[in-house]
Image (cartoon, rainbow, N blue to C red; front, side):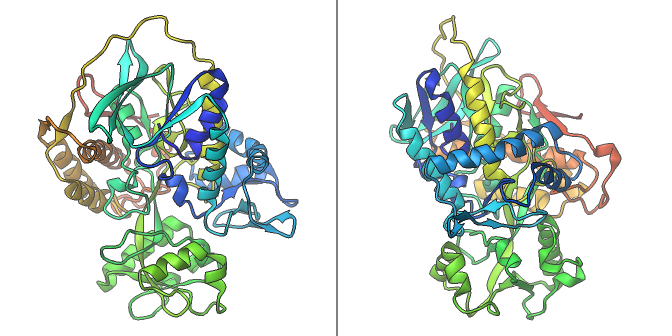
Length: 507
């Protein structure tokens, strides 16, 4: 389920074991991977080492990385990049040599880009082309997973909403991989595409799978903020190139919040912008690139430049209005090092999964890498799953839908579970989400299923954020601003028997 880098990597790997169906919620081109402006990290340059990449990842994870999972990621990264190049990925080069850039919290230049700011799109293009050359792989577009089909404690397939027929269908499978991407649309402001409504996490949780560290959400500090316009991401590489953050009075304000100013870690920059807006009452901060050489932004970041220009912002002559937006989920469906979840025959990879690679805060450009590496590992493990010996009886599908609008849900999540959090607001949000009445719909549509999943994920985030009484990584509590050794543990949630309500523990 999912046609981004994780889903395609798994499909290619599993193709030798039987028929593989890749199901996309929207078009085959619509995924979080497609919008990934940042690069993909790997210790391939002459002055880099795998151990340094491992160290940088663990430091960024703020005490919660699974060290073994990180080691797998960084050790398999060089071979994964070479494989992508062999399949046709066109990474940026300087002459014949690969061009390595440095991004925040990396100690070496190890980040590869493609076409400047279109790395995700180029990798997806390559993987999609490779998958289409394999006869055993087929594709289905416009089908959104709505629930998992569980028989005898094992996953036997999925229920999906087919937009073409406007019906819910069951898809039986020997094994299922959730590669459904992120959950940014749970929040009012997000850089994620419309399809990122946390479907995989919600479906897995309802089926009984464990959900880990879901409170850790990374908020990107600089999303284009124009009313009525999607929150388009303005890469932190722009600040790396020398961009300034200013308030509405034109003052550079980051020096008041961190000695690294605009180059502070992204969670620090996000909090600083929110604090500055609260202090000034302004609607947005401004990313100023006008002092950079003429033509620089247009040449090096063409997609960003053209998108901003489309909305009336010429980055070479005017600053762009920006605000933080939900960008990436570090937590998700708990998996082992081969994508196996706590339910037999169910796998997860990419942003929907929690391998422990990212800990409490993701290192820049490790997300595409995780999708490629762990997607392939999940595909390998799926090949070993034995066929079922027992026939699966037909089952009718019923779903309850929360009586609340998507707009209200996203506002609740943004206001209580956003960049700055506190106990009373989290508790109020959690109780409000729990108090929703439910209704059955004779004619469900994709939007209703998405609202159901957003409600489920917002409930999980608020519950975990309320229970974690500290500040760590992407989780910041104004009432508990310090990190606590007592919470150097992972939050794990499972469904109370017979309900969709979460039980939480720290392990």
